Length: 421
Image 1 (cartoon, rainbow, N blue to C red):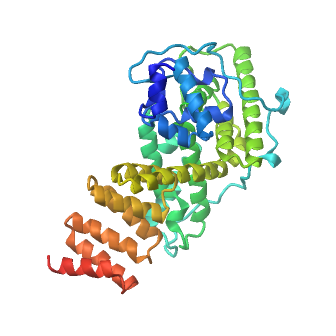
Image 2 (image 1 turned 90 degrees about the vertical axis):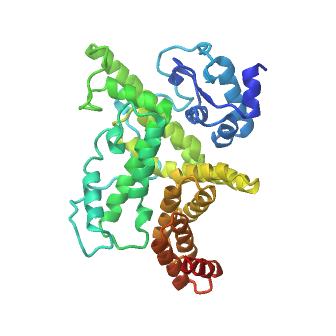
Image 3 (image 1 turned 120 degrees about the vertical axis):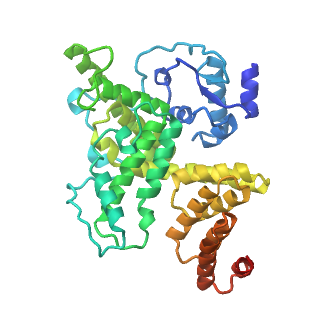
């Protein structure tokens, strides 16, 4: 094993895609494609092996083989073209026979669960609902742009990097996640929030993976109907027959990825199903049937991913590494932005680490918003305000905690200390 592979096995190095290497040119299974899309230039080998969706031994073998073949590099290592790689579009994993062109559309009845009903009626501001008027208007305005490109949905430029896409998704998911209004009467806004959040998840999942983003951009460039507001490909228009043939081939590949995703969905292999359906959408972004069940597949896949991340976070806590644990809890929040316990623990760790009280306050406030009757959330928020020297806010939250739980000894002690300030 060479030196680079040795470092990979040790799990200390951070890989990235080699410059000039096109991951879509590789003959990958959906599971391998999912693992490769986790390579973002900031996640170390040891974590990729845990969150890659494959058994650890298989994930490690894949990563080492890609490193040795030059698909991945560490640091400033030069790119060695992968053996046998070419610039044509990749063949998807073995699946059902490609259907004739006239039958390329999927069978909606056999799609992963997902519903597409009649168009939603226009919304109007209703002061009787348990949602602020400004939030109602924000939902109305945001809902009007869901048919635009994924970049427009997230509010990022087409050239945005992975960090900008993740930041945009986290901000929007916290704002529009239906759980934000749990147990509130919000009338027709509930259905609209679900539709908005589904589109936000769809945009993030497709744009955050290098392989699917590359295919999506290629689809938009080749198909002028896919993005009317975009300019044609820089190489100029192609003859109609050539373009039509390319589109037909992409639709066939999309169909095969989709069928592979359905099979994985039925077998409850959520990570594999998510990867396959994601690629189907990337190859044929105008096919609404592919998108219908995507969010549900992603929800199940994210549940697995977040559980893996939280297991690592708990291990870091057991080893008394709060900085590492905080980073992992924050990663889990990208998948579960309104989980009150994850927010509470992230807030507590942010307070302990002490590097960003603003984040600590944001996480604790979210926990209070989702579970307003839990004293421990308000007590923690009060402690964070106290650390920020916001005494009045601290007393308000500590007193709220004591109203909810008069026996809370920690809150009583905090209130005594505040009164002496």
